[in-house]
Image 1 (cartoon, rainbow, N blue to C red):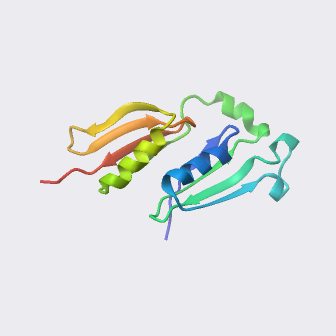
Image 2 (cartoon, rainbow, N blue to C red; image 1 turned 120 degrees about the horizontal axis):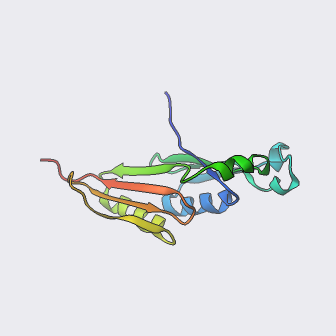
Length: 141
């Protein structure tokens, strides 16, 4: 079996962001710091997250980490979002609940509403700068 899991790079707030996502999706969150693995080349990185993984009960899995100071110049050269996360399915209540939680403190780019293709669709940028698309499947003819 092969899995594809999104991996989000954060500047300095991976712990806060991943805990927020656990509050949105539920599930088990594991986190490891650079210090725990003896990989903090800069003492200011010691308590930053080297790796985290959120596994929700419904199968949603994604990962995240802080960008260490030794790689910050690469971060500063990036433009725009590092990733767009897409949630889709048929469970209207579940997906609207995620939408409501993710949009808190964020910016709605496209309201979650009926789209020309018959599904409910919306886009937002959460309070951590991560872009999200939500698509709720409509009734098929």
